[in-house]
Length: 227
Image (cartoon, rainbow, N blue to C red; front, side, top):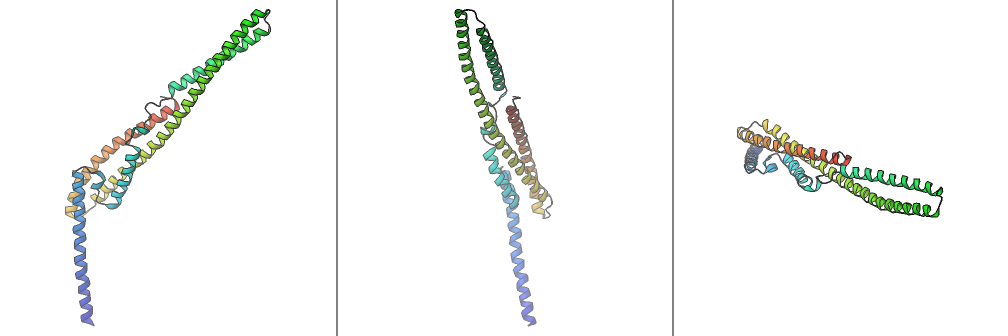
């Protein structure tokens, strides 16, 4: 019975020894593969931690979807000029209506048929001008509504872009923190190189992050009529 117990214990110890060693080697191989990815500037693939790498890749896909497209920029959707044109045309129409009202008052006190006919002609001309300018105003207002709707879509896309960029930055930052705490010498040496690479990637993302924020501010300025 004692021999059987000792024999089983040796078996368990031997099995644990041979199972544990490949795991360590496999872990080092993962770090070497990550370093190779960094040397070839393959971004998220350079993260040896699967949880941070998966997060980086998922959010990186969203960066591709929402950021790396011109569809969300608000360049060309500035509304200030259109708003000013709407304001000026509205005032012009109101002025034409006032002129028409004054002519209508004059007609009631006109002394002759020729005078009334002259006033009627002027009123008719004003009515046509009011009609034409009102149609033009309606078109401008619809154009403004369309532009604002397009801007809102781009603001949504820009917000998603910003969130995705923030998440990618977070993945590199968290990976750096964990790599800095590694104790195994070979892994720690590789980790130092990876941290330097991730720092450069974060700098690149930080610039893109600022560009995205500026783009969103441009969209908001366009929507409010500041641009």
